[in-house]
Image 1 (cartoon, rainbow, N blue to C red):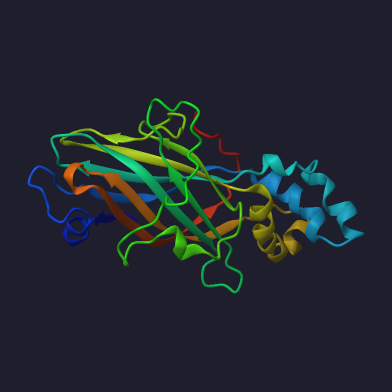
Image 2: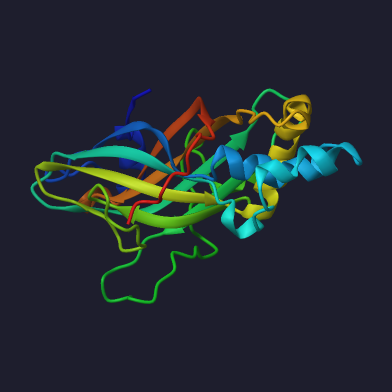
Length: 261
């Protein structure tokens, strides 16, 4: 699902007191959230079978799935995909990004993870994207800020960086949209292993009958994604552009996804 978003002129004017003729607002198109890394179906079955199938049945049902993988091998990661159009005669950098993901929206248990990323200039090679106290805070009431997600689960969502080229390793180097042009930006986020695996245990519990007879269940993860991009647009200053909320589902695949390198 694609969503076209643009910052309002009123908001830009509020930042600077006027809209300079030399700067124009960019347009951001949110293109979706693609699963980038996940354990295989077999790994999910091996991990959860001894946790949800009761003893002594688990002694017979679980060994065929193989050894229980460590939590560190059960990473689930995804790419948020955007297209940014820059109508200006100068490049514009993407300065900050806020992403919020709700798992199992609409259900009684809705784990929420947030991540605020501050991108770094090329002269900061050791930058990790960590935000400061004033990062990811919007001045407009209709734009999502980090303060809007105070109930988020700690360590559920972790940023890995962004890339401008398909297959490029993500980093925290500030992405820049060329003048009079467009940039396809992929932002990589991963779920913290422990909180994510706890959240998925309810799916495993729903599949206990399949696991008990040696069948591989399908793990379908409903999600809702929303957030904000901040771009530095010349005389307009730092402009915030919101995206979402957008609902979707990820399905843990039958073969292991390999992360992009």
